[in-house]
Image (cartoon, rainbow, N blue to C red):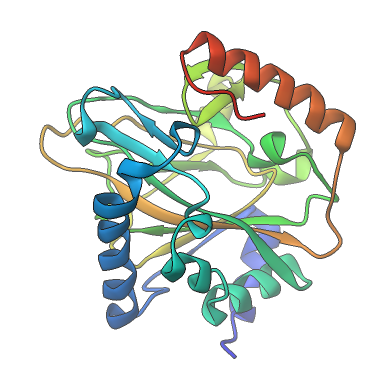
Length: 254
């Protein structure tokens, strides 16, 4: 069992923590190879509600994959990876299980930003014992879409969100101000580095302004064993998301 206790204080204080080389090179190479295989072999046959493109007519603009564990043996088994579970248990403070396995990308020549948001606005879990473990697959910097966190924002609770037209990030914070931006911390990563953030931590990402570089990352979102869904809030959000996807020409998610 790995010990990540040294990161707990920073996570509780700031709502996020960066762990350099969370995945050793040999483990990272296995993961990256299977991500590439999944994109090549599995993605073409997936329901469109699980895969988002900047432009569906251009496969090279693939930008997000959800629920990878549902359609592939490697990722179904990877969902139990001890290193990830040890980290989530330590930071959340109780046993935790992954909600889903996801892949994110900012393709070159698309220049779309990720709006400021809080993950648990989507999940509707109480209490918010939630942590997203996000591992860089590519080098990530200011050119291809660095991540930005508002330190300590998880302690202030939920902020108002409203509709965006960005698939995969249907809601963004509506009252995000210059004062929030002044508190942002921009973080660059190398492959294998991990960023972990609390479910209420405000974060966003810059657009990819590169003409040649992708910005890929693989993530597991963990929920503590004490979490329960807020069923009423979840239904309201699901109905709004269904309507939004229909307007954007995406299959309904139910």
